[in-house]
Length: 144
Image 1 (cartoon, rainbow, N blue to C red):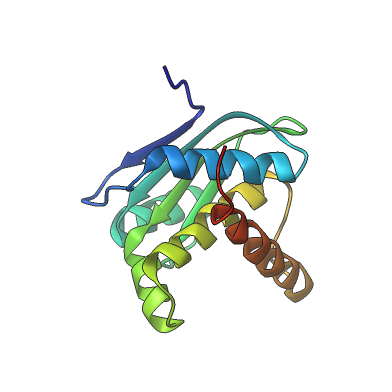
Image 2 (image 1 turned 90 degrees about the vertical axis):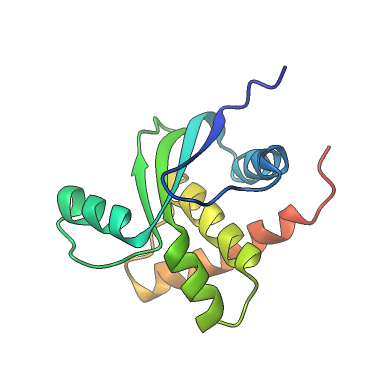
């Protein structure tokens, strides 16, 4: 019986294929940052759903690909990560990458935020991109 502490929900038509593989990879990302998993919920949604959250909770009237609510305590990670699959699809086309690769970038981005990484300054954003690339490579490592 799999009692994963990583949950995937969808508020739109998106369905993540092979949830167990993604959960295992995310757990490896967390471990690679010296963190412990309490519980993370990923909520896939469309642009309008995420825009409402952005306006209501963050007072930002802009579209975004991800919003992370961090409930972590020290090195124990817990949070809700909302992802607009509309934005992920558009970004994958803009940057000429596969949708799945862009999705993994965003999934890891949320975990990195929970791990304490920021992306407000240019220096922080550069480190975040580098960490995303590093974590995306872990997906292709054979999961145990």
